[in-house]
Length: 115
Image 1 (cartoon, rainbow, N blue to C red):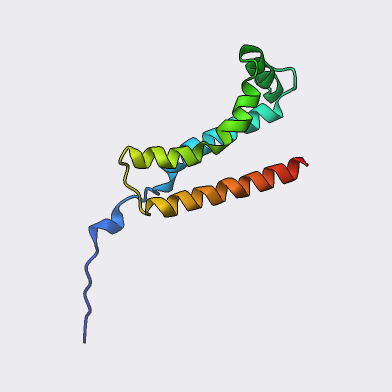
Image 2: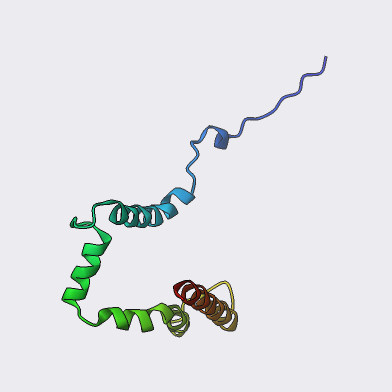
């Protein structure tokens, strides 16, 4: 009679902790807050419309500044991070090309939907 033996790895008894849970906290929070601002009544303190109106009261003209300039900050961020010496998985030209493509795609989609 042949008896086969095997060893049980101590790793098999360890609890599983998915790595994605920690990375999902911030996006899940932002999605939840955004959903709440859309679901509450329009005249409520947490309403998207109330928050928008208050921001425009506090900072007149900020809407135009944000609309025209802030949407292209990822291009500046790529250059700034490279200048600061932050290492990345791809070279600077490839990063810049990908970021420029995404900005162009975003502009085409957003402007297309608006018109």
